[in-house]
Amino acid sequence: MTDLLSKFDPLIQEREALLSTGVADPYAVVMEEVKSPTVAICNGRETILLGTYNYMGMTFDDDVLHAGKQALDDFGSGTTGSRVLNGTYQTHKECEDALKEFYAMDHAMVFSTGYQANLGMISALAGKGDYVIIDIDSHASIYDGCSMGNAEIVAFRHNDVEALEKRLRRLPEEAGKLVVLEGVYSMLGDVAPLKEMIALCKQYGAMTLIDEAHSMGFIGENGRGVAEAAGVIDDVDFILGTFSKSVGTVGGFCVSNHPKFEIMRLVCRPYIFTASLPPSVVATAATSIRKLMHAGNKRAHLWENSKRLHQGLRDMGYRLGTPEAQSGIIAVMVEDMLEGARLWQALLENGLYVNLARPPATPLGMTLLRCSLCAEHTSEQVTQILGMFEKAGKEVGVI
Image (tube, rainbow, N blue to C red; front, side, top):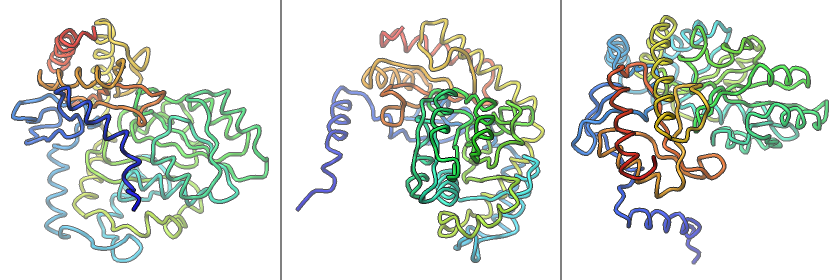
């Protein structure tokens, strides 16, 4: 009998070799208690959280928590059904209304996760005979959405405007074309040159879908993402995002001004065939989204934190994923998985949690420690974080 798991043997061996060095499993951290958006108890120790994507720190907001508790009392623990059957409650409509107001767009559609939002939108929009043009560093959910829709996938070099134009120029003029881009790329924290790319898409007759998962709430004057900051939000066909980052809960969404958008509710399989989010979750999301409309001071503080941490790490001698702070993500690049794991563990033992990212999730086979800042990190915590990176880096020999 063929062992269907044998194809994972190289990964199993790599993991066993890493753990045999005495390094803790970086993918099995348990948070025994979460005290705030920035502090938790990990392995019995108070730990600063720098790897949670909780950019705007909404997970413990009093209004958000109250809305969730009230919805739990009013509507129960779950819907037990899909959005197209019994799974649309008043709370789901209110959440979509909040999204429409936040983005100033005509239509909004809430999915059960951000992954499913990409899976549903891309697979429904681009099918057999169509082309999906994507950045080679796109998130797994974007690749999976392309595969599910049977469209022809055309990838171009990361953030390369010229490479995008070459791909678009070669495609049949009459073919359906969807260009999928991310505002912020989650591994290195770099930003897409959307102004130039959206102009090219219009020139070549391609529709556009921008995934603003890592920029919604934080980047742009109103927190609408990189498309807003680049001044092209009105030229984008679809904006997609998640509730699991700045919004502080779970779920996904897509907003659009396209006049035919509502038909997507009847053609997106991940929307149709998945139970809808519990009413308490969408109630917290709606409350959080409405508060993010007026979070200019929090956005400014997060930018301060990001710029200060980036500069401090660079001054210590760390190699970073971007030349300057471009988002709430700062990627510390290391030589290999073992060095990365040792630095990750040294940081954890010093009271700091970050993400250890490895291939194939990372571009170009890199290993990196990914830091994601929060608007609730105090200036004092950023000072502590820098001290922890200096101490751990010297212990491991990275700096």
